Image (cartoon, rainbow, N blue to C red; front, side):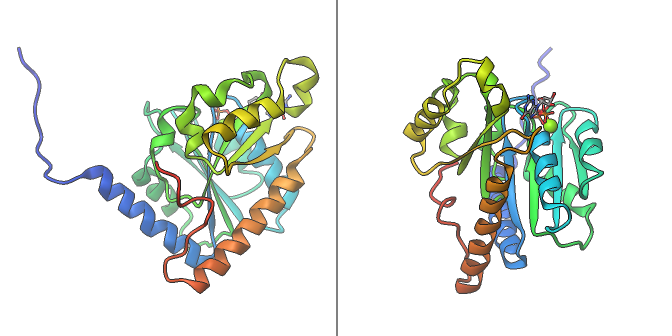
Length: 239
Ligand SMILES: Nc1nc2c(ncn2[C@@H]2O[C@H](COP(=O)(O)OP(=O)(O)OP(=O)(O)O)[C@@H](O)[C@H]2O)c(=O)[nH]1
Ligand SMILES: [Mg+2]
């Protein structure tokens, strides 16, 4: 029996999502909220970096997190003691899309934040293809994953603005060269900023937070100077 059904939608759904993302990005910039999409393979340390970021700011900065996972609200439970957080459960999908982000934002009501982090589902492939209205796309690479990974997952690094090398405390125990990893990533995206951090000790976290603060200030300056604010680091990247 043939169970295939063809549905004619007569519109480009992906283009519509991109348009919504662009509109939201502009609105966030007008309101002074820097949106950061955080991506990596599973277990690279995304939630740990967000915990360390919240601890560093210690209520001096208003941040919130939308956290995406296939299942469970474990990451939201970890982050809840530090900042407003909403868990986005994809129920099997390997990445977040803008409608789920919009639903998550509803849980924050009218609260305004200086920084909105979106922790994407752990995956170095599919999330690279989806614009979540972010101003900055950040890819984590932990030292246990190998310094050869940027070239093997080029789209993730080509569409990112920042690479964070995580778990730096493990460098003495694994064959990983920070320089080799960053050089490999820069062959793909030569403007990539890089940070090396250990979220457990807080090493490198102050520099990462300072960069976010400066990027937000630049975004606000651009937004007031122009009706269509752009971050020079982000816009040229083809998604
Ligand atoms: N040694 C060391 N371990 C770390 C560091 N950061 C995170 N970890 C550990 O790495 C494991 C995974 O960290 P998570 O923060 O849960 O990683 P994640 O990327 O959020 O994972 P998913 O959301 O499942 O994709 C945990 O056991 C952390 O304690 C670090 O800087 N050093
Ligand atoms: Mg996590």
